[in-house]
Image (tube, rainbow over all chains, first blue to last red; front, side, top):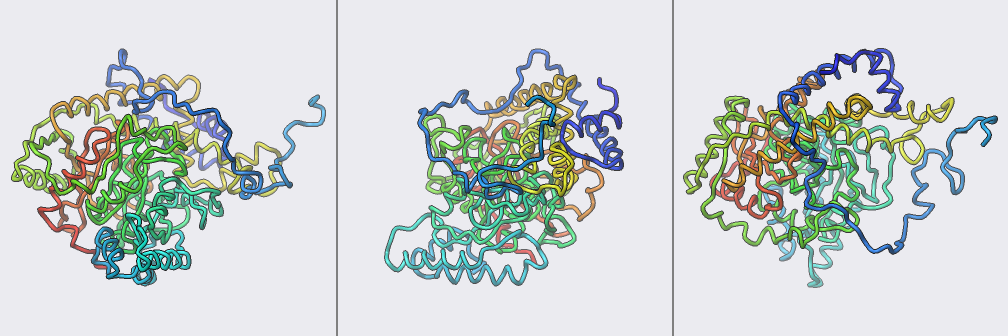
Amino acid sequence: MAEKIDNEQVRKVAKLSRLELTDSEIEEFTGQLGAILEYVEKMNELDTETIEPLAHCLPVSNVFREDIAKESLGTEKTLANAPKKDETYFLVPKILDDNSGA
Amino acid sequence: MEELTAKQLRDKIASGQIKSLDAVNDVFSRIEKYEPVIGAYISTFKEQAIEQAEQVDKKVSAGEPLGQLAGVPIAVKDNMCTTFGATTCASKILENFHAPYNATAVEKLIAADAVIIGKTNLDEFAMGSSTENSGLKKTVNPWDTTRVPGGSSGGATASVAARMCSAALGSDTGGSIRQPASFCGVVGLKPTYGRVSRYGLVAYGSSLDQIGPVTQTVEDAALMLNVIAGHDSSDSTSVNETIAPTYDYLEKLNEPVEKLKIAVAPQLNAGADQQVQNTLHEAINIYKNLGAEIIEVKMPHLDYAIAAYYIIATAEASSNLARYDGVHYGHRTQNPKDYVEVYSKSRAEAFGQEVKRRIMLGTYALSSGYYDAYYLKALKVRNLIRSDFTKAFEKCDCVMMPVAPTTAFKIGEKTSDPLQMYLSDIYTIAANLAGIPGISIPCGFDDKDLPIGLQILSPAFTEDKLLRIAKMYEKENNWYDKRPNI
């Protein structure tokens, strides 16, 4: 099936995963993920053409409740674990640059 | 006092023969003595536990109604939220995280008057089979301190094995209760998916995760399940009583199952170490002597369980762990140059290697061009695995197999090869993919005096019967009386 995963693909996946990996980590993961994926390929021995995918095992589908507002955590508790905050806000670096038109 | 099971201790506390305070002090003196060697706990709450114990003792002397776990010292795996202490998941990213609410299972323990004494070690975010992936500390096996306790609930099972608590709560995504229970010679029950609320259990693989008890005996597992089972409006995947009623799991525990039919899959079992196979064979003979009928089944798709699991679980993990962003809670990198670095550096600095590996694998399996080949394929294989069980259960009450292919392995033996570590989950993973309950009970020792477990799997929502089947075996032997010599 798929060709063996290489350093470039691993770099791309690290970017998608928002993980800043070192070159040696990229190297290590390329080998390890390659071995795991090679093992996983054994699923291809099975013909699953007519088989439905099973995402979970419960005999329930949509679960609804009455649309009634309940008490929420509140600002203080919500922000209690924030590494950086400013009164009622989480603090993050600027996301849009100055000439973005925002 | 360490000779008493949770049920026996509860009864003696309720009848005034033992004070909860004495039981709690006794447990803490054992923790002081053994914890430096075993390393089962990430945090303990002595002061709070003493206060709780004193309250229970007051209730006893006032003749007030008592919960089912009144005064019993219980430990909780540190991936369940508690408003007291930290909830770390054994990860540096959550090292200082203080949850704003209690997990429902923890609330239920408290409502049952249990005394929560501490939170136990685990593989980071429950990802592992040896507890060696903990980002915070090392736990060893009480039966042989050069060996792993199993994982990921290794702190919980080591703690129960060393009697540093009467019972514990673990979680099981691919065997994380049953496998360490087997390695540590204690009882571990993974309930049916949906039987116990996952609210407040830090998510790893949401379609697979389930909270369950780690105990000394089958009776204690029934007692703990009595307390934690049931629907919870905060978890929409916890099942309503009208779909699957809960029972008093203790009530009929001692009644053997009539006309018990047990299935074994010889081809599957052939992969286990010879001593594990022999012990399984002896255990099944005990059932035979009790009048059970043994049938052979083929479960051809179980061979593919590890492959499907490590795609599905990691795909779910890659999504679940996206929440650790360095913004809302948890570790945040110093001096990021932009917002992307807040995410990518915070995560890189604080996640351990196994967590990174699984996030990467899951992200890859879900990424454009690979989704059908890996993720969708794995979900289809999952369906085939479930149908193996459905077909088997048409002919039997339960399936018996080993819990793990070997007894506890040496510390460091499998850490350099993640795939070898994954393969040790071969017998436990299928139950999570199929959503069915499974129990590991002690069924003997190998020539190194390491515990071996018997795994029993039954149809969804038949924990009452599963526990009765397990109890039939337990009555015939006294493995649980044997203690590790720490």
